[in-house]
Image 1 (cartoon, rainbow, N blue to C red):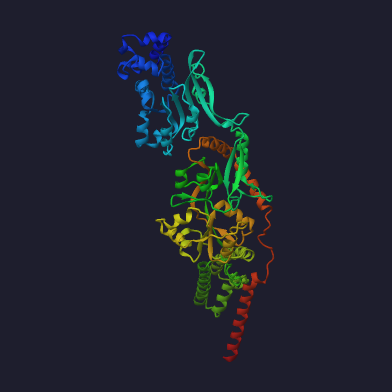
Image 2 (image 1 turned 45 degrees about the vertical axis):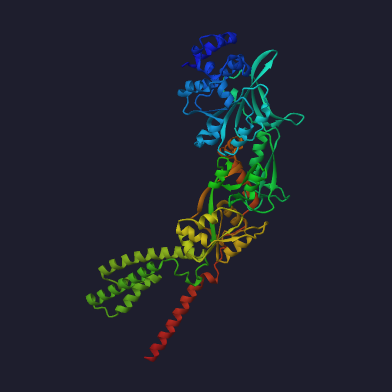
Length: 633
């Protein structure tokens, strides 16, 4: 077995006279890549298939890549029948084995018909090397059916100088890779060279022809000394290409919404334009006539995702959730926004205002206050009567209890010291109770008292409220119905979906039902906050503490789009710098404007104080009844 240095040294010294080297009788002493006696019946046939000089160039490039420039990557080598005969790639793999985590050598047929883990066919740590002597059209068309085929680095070794490799590069399955390198031999001025190419299909010359096959130069160790030199960026500049965006400019503030002039604007639109300017592409908004977010029904996508998968759109930038279905069928950027589904309900009706005088204390507190007052005043009166023979214990009881209502008590009439100590402690407690009651009473009179609100999903499921959503194709209603959680399943079964919402005011009808106290609207939490403030419903509605389905928003592209990572990196940069959050805040402020609501008018009216007048009326009635009884007796 030969190491790379030993092999290359021998190759350089021998290839100066390749014909003489190949005609040596000591064929067994040559590297395994030249097992001519076992691979071909005669040297003449071999030389007719692949010139010796060209074979040396191929082995030089292949070993330089496998044993040097591609170290640290997982390696997948795929050969056709002829390349297997012409080059013993297995020898290169055996030498490279110790330098790679995974090295797989396979044939085209085996790759198509053998099930492999996804990390053997896709990923940023995988380099796939395809060696072919004949046009691989049939193989590539079959490979395109494998949606998991997407190595980030793809190297194409064409062993035939006459083969039209532009058609190879035009294959969609080839264009999936983020980086592409093509080697093809050529003869110039009688000398055989190995040319390197990449592919930049988004670039066009002045005549409009695409740079599908872009030359990088003649292969040499000096020119291609690093991985960056081998794999230059393909999408650092889109050359002014137009990306078609499938969007819904309704019901998605502040991410996307219709401006006054009818154009589509919003935070995501601004982000797309910033990235477009950086990467030199244009965006064209194709607004769906029907407001359908997009879901998978019976294996078929509709809405924006249907446009993306079946109708040639390039990008979806609405506030779309990452779900198992979207991950399976589309490319997606790194999440740019965390979100969840919020639930908005009507604020419960205020409690009756005539009970305001009771609200400062709970029922238990009132019971303790009155109970303590009765015990303290009665016990003191009884003790005084028994120990000091006081003739009016009822009067003493009333005087002690009256302190609770702010009535003064003449301490000069109390000349017994133990009674004074007793009363001192009682007055201190009463003073504290009076301050607390007065403070709470002021709050209750100015801020209405409400019954307890529903704040948990379990309470909502057990209540009379009907959960409702807009029916524009979200996954959530079906997910709730099929949930194994009883609470979520109950919410799903009670769900009302509004299919005929107004495009200009999509939540109008459902919010009316919320304000009637019959429905609970479920919608994206950020949008819920926005619409609550926009429609000035912050006093009449509230958003529950519990939320549904914590989720993340991403942009989505067609599966195996080669520039997904490029867009994702730029979008993530906007998130990390805080620019995207600032953009969203700007749009929210522009949409809502100045907050026009006032929490209260600051005036106490009769409704606030009716409790006191009711107590007065009851007191007068009791006094009148007592008067009548006294006269009757």
